[in-house]
Length: 528
Image (cartoon, rainbow, N blue to C red):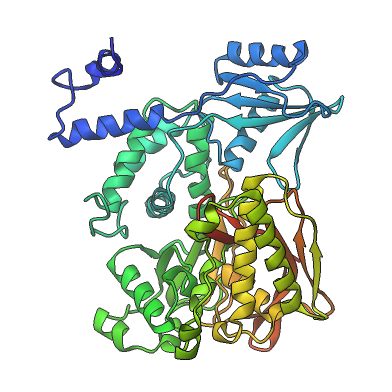
């Protein structure tokens, strides 16, 4: 029996004809949902697993709420164990944290305290010092950006209609009834837009289809977290603006694209709002008006403080433990002049030849770029360089070479990127990653919670904000042979006009993304 025979034998009952009709949208949707269920990791036990840890697997699986697929001991020297659980997203730390809390509450994990590794996941540390880390093998409830934002919008609309009166998080007891009630509310998808997206479906159709995955899945912690995170954000927006009109349709797209065209930047860097909320007695500019309105005047359409009205509220939606933002596109701001073009423009990505370098060639290239970066930084009193030996592994060498090429590009074309020095260039690039572009409207960052509790009052980024290196601090550029990347540590002041509005400690990472492209991203952003 081949794989297709096994597939149809297992799932034939789901189709009216006993097999899928690819001309029937209903059958196509069923296949899509089945495939989402099948996209999971297969993991095996690894390392020496003591009896007391093995008993945890037996007890958890016997409880039947979760299924432990594998146990692993990643290092011999530490009493740390990875517990791989089915139907848990491998990349969602909030989801894995909620599973850890639930296992502890049920008594399926030993008594202990929940903590978090500085650069990694959450863990439970038992009374004897053993650390248990929940890992996921995959989940059909891993949501795309469109689905997350769509959930926030429909939950907000539903809250306006007195849905979920108790404002409770989704749990095993109420999920089915809350979703049934949600689907019965007229106009709950208002604001998502009617434009067909890639694949020929509208945003509403995509959200409606995803909601069908939750049928009969009330006990799944992954399902609960995937709904609770956007619910948390919707609750915060509703608490401040109970009568707003959410927008993600044509007008939303028109305003963002117009702002981007006028600023010459990517739309999400000019206006990071994932959702606009129309509040108060306010008339949205027509499409023709948007086209002829200057960027500064267009930015005035947006409210300046959380709670203000009338106007549009630009809301940037984030998850717990989300990265700060991408900064690489800052390098695209450089537009070479004719003389620079004639000389030949450097590339910040790896060439095909560089991707094929031997270890010896990679070491030679790395040594050359290290020398170049030292020359470019010179005796700057604002930058400390901490450059170590070249990495031992080929892959790490390639990753590090990509990082050096990005730094060299930044330092080589400072003037064209609107910077005055290497330190100023790094600050501007970091600010760009935070969507502080000096042309942005005021926007508010709402960070959802996987527990479903109402999100905290959002962080405000003021209109036309700028950034500077915090006086008395220095930028530290660190290249260690074990990193496979270059880390940049800095502290910045966010300025509203000439006044310091907020301060952040940032950590940027420059590295290869695994191919010939590199990436520069904010790995940590701690508000001081």
